[in-house]
Image: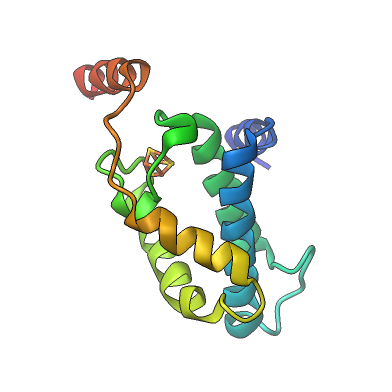
Length: 139
Ligand code: SF4
Ligand SMILES: [Zn+2]
């Protein structure tokens, strides 16, 4: 396993606040639905195949690093969008498929996510703005 992957996986395990943990729970539930229906033949651990687990590690890592912290908008509405293009597309495909299938098995998570998606996007906190400016300077 490359050293970079180990680092990301380890960082992805850092504790999340209650709010971010609830968001991650929704992402896990959606990814499980997607994986169940699209990767039925693949070996699974905790309800997902290794590809989907890699997506979940990435998504959790981005949550740990999210410059908005607890006030984050849904990633779909986010003007920063910290996902790499291929991960962004993977997230879009998973959410589009699993979103409408969430209501029956996970009504509370589904409604919470719908309400979250309608909330206005907050201003980026100062710390996040500075980090973003520094990153843009170095790009
Ligand atoms: S896409 Fe936006 S809201 Fe989602 S984790 Fe990245 S910075 Fe935070
Ligand atoms: Zn899968």
